[in-house]
Length: 348
Ligand SMILES: [Zn+2]
Ligand SMILES: [Zn+2]
Image (cartoon, rainbow, N blue to C red):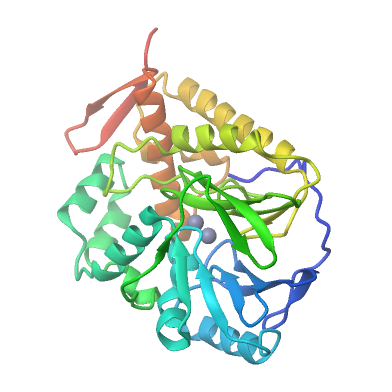
């Protein structure tokens, strides 16, 4: 969901060009690599460890991104090797080149246990056709028949298509643990809803926050539900995390997100995000005065036409909202004869 009103400030006026870095402060570089989708770039942060770099997140394992990395490795990062990768969460735009850094550069990997298990499981889970559980999940969400037919007749997206194989071995990071990155101390705080146990890092004695995709300045993170856990209340989990993280947020912190621009006003942004999603739930509830499928809810949730490229993400997020309303007792659901859930507000 897009938000027109901005409650944050952007201390940096323009992002780094491909292959270049912006120095956020002494020993901390901000770089970007491209993505074949919206948002169009992933932010990479590099911390000077003296004799090596720690980098946060990596981009997808596709030719263009590997070329961008080659330029970074002989450019702004040339002085020393990448010794450690911190992975904020398992999504392919973040994990894609982790295995490459481990295998080809000898870097160690630090991430949460859920991140590592999801990333490695999905990378190994190569499918030649969509599983029957995934098809049933999409039918239950009321996926458009043409889109479903097109997907069923094409090769499924596999993690391994865009994620380099991950070797065994990582260093687990724990919620509330203090870790050292660069010359600074950080507290790990996990967020839920966008990805399980997504790691964010909060300055212990400084005002930097590595916000990952948990908090983005201009869009709400996707809160999708998948066939792996069809009943997940992703929206409820994410709102709960936002409220928890809000306790540690201050206006003057510089938030370094996974996408878009670094920003200040993290406290106001967290408040705003909760309001945006809470309002969306209320509007959706009104719309459910009549029984609807998840796929009927795009207009009310997104307020704009959803194109084919966004359809999948829009659908899984609509399920997240409906699951939340269902599990908090505000809607009931029944299976239609075509296998789709019909969701309806309780009462009246
Ligand atoms: Zn993500
Ligand atoms: Zn991301």
